[in-house]
Image (tube, rainbow, N blue to C red; front, side, top):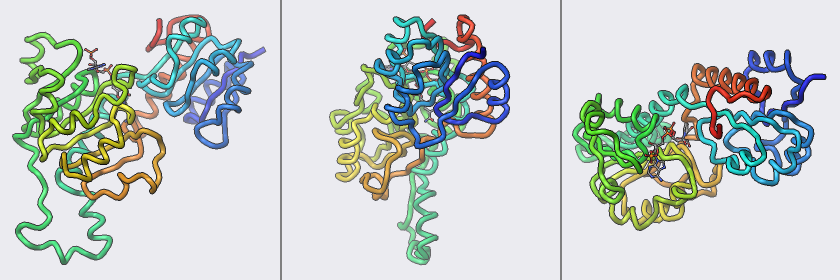
Length: 322
Ligand code: NAP
């Protein structure tokens, strides 16, 4: 008898065809994310799970999953999985780093350019038939990118890829991690380590690339916004809960900082009741960091490889908890 695998959402057809050869697969078709009650019921008899960042794979789910051997998440972030508890239960976890680094760095840079040059805002102006009002010399000015200080919080795979792009745009780059890079690496990349506080004080643009953990929960809050330049911008393509969203909304309203571009939010998806959707100095995208056809295909390939390895008790190709 084939082993059973649950997918909380459909993957690419090529991936599903491959999975069907080896496993009895069940794909959740309804509302996304899968309601917890349904997840608890469906996971009970499954040997493998393919999930997405919006699925909350907590202790309850893992406890209900009596037969589960492996989880393969279609993401590099794994903050939605109780990794510690999974390890205790002997469940391996695979994820998809590296292949989505460039796509996410590109989206980060698209947001920086959009926010500072007010592209989306201009698009809205044209569509409302208001172009005629912005012809004056002082009207509709943006901000230069070249020569500005970009502060990268979390200089890992994506942070480093953003730095590479920023170099080409003539920016000066500072970064903060818990561990510093070697002096040689800093020199060859043209980046400088600063303390956490200095990153926020000195930067014209802060771009967030740390994972979401207990340590980074609402790490970016009013205390920091008050330290930032009034002309500065914040970009978040990491995870929504790293920023205290209400503080950000207040800081934007009161012009404590100049603007924000966000791909991730405290509670996703956000609707029109979120004040961010009404703000002129904000650019929003619907969590599309890795969303290119090429990258998504590679992520699906790795998700399947990770699952297959985990199902036979081997370490996934990219393993979170081996
Ligand atoms: P990564 O290579 O692991 O980089 C994370 C960096 O953050 C590391 O350099 C780490 O360095 C630093 N860091 C971790 N905790 C920190 C802390 N408390 N304070 C300061 N620095 C800290 O991860 P990545 O592949 O670049 O991905 C980063 C995140 O992007 C993912 O976790 C995911 O949530 C998000 N992401 C979002 C999308 C999207 O669609 N928007 C797509 C892909 C990824 P130290 O260990 O030295 O601190």
